[in-house]
Length: 293
Ligand code: NAD
Image (cartoon, rainbow, N blue to C red; front, side, top):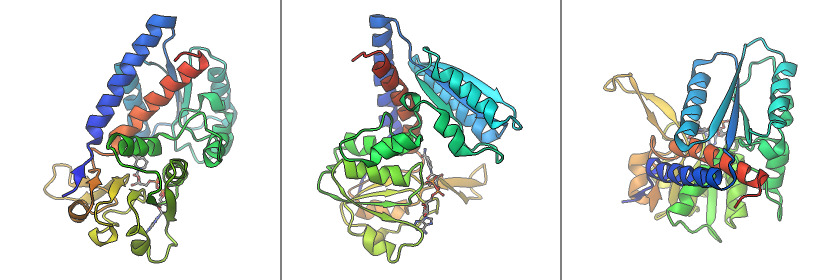
């Protein structure tokens, strides 16, 4: 049976390491890393995400700044706040919580974040640098960064291996594929128009699934011994659960865990890593801005 990659445990280790570094930096140069979060509108799920990010910051000693703007704000108002955080020396990371209200153009807003404070890694210049040989982005998007961290910390070799990423979204699949390629894997991307996805996936030593379809990847898609990182978070009906549903991944865990060499569970795999990587990016930013190693 596959080794279970415990994302909750790894995320806890990462947060502890960050707390140590934050304290060391404060002691040495008196700088506290700061993260600014901008939330537009009053979506309940976004409010929860923002609250969790704030709590996670506090727990490791990172200072957090929050701006809540009404749903009917203009793009200019949002950009004005971004600009003021861009020039605020106590802010090292700026995050605009997505999705934005429909009347706003995401691109205009994400472009306004200074690339050296773009801790979400969504600025087109950061994505472009990620895609280029011999260049590095200032920041790597948090969820795919978390996937890579899980592979590294589980001792999975990447160099020269075949990797398949299922899904090509801007926030997960595409940057995950670029990261695997930078780590010297040979990468294929399987997406909604791919023919024979199971055949392609079966060649992979490493699979990252980021689709949003419950249990899409079956046991017979998987090469024996492969490492499986399951990003999907999908609710499925479950009358036995008090909430009436439970969360499953894009990979059929029961089948895959019999074939794979290592696998992340859902929940408790990639999920907890995302916020840990946001904290890591914020610390990294403060260190870079203040030239502290
Ligand atoms: P998305 O909807 O933006 O992208 C899905 C991708 O899957 C698309 O590129 C599409 O081409 C591809 N796809 C759709 N159907 C397919 C099929 N049948 N076969 C192969 N590819 C197919 O989704 P996303 O934002 O990338 O998120 C994917 C999943 O990951 C979701 O379940 C989401 O909830 C989860 N997620 C988790 C985290 C986290 O753990 N922190 C973060 C982001 C997303």
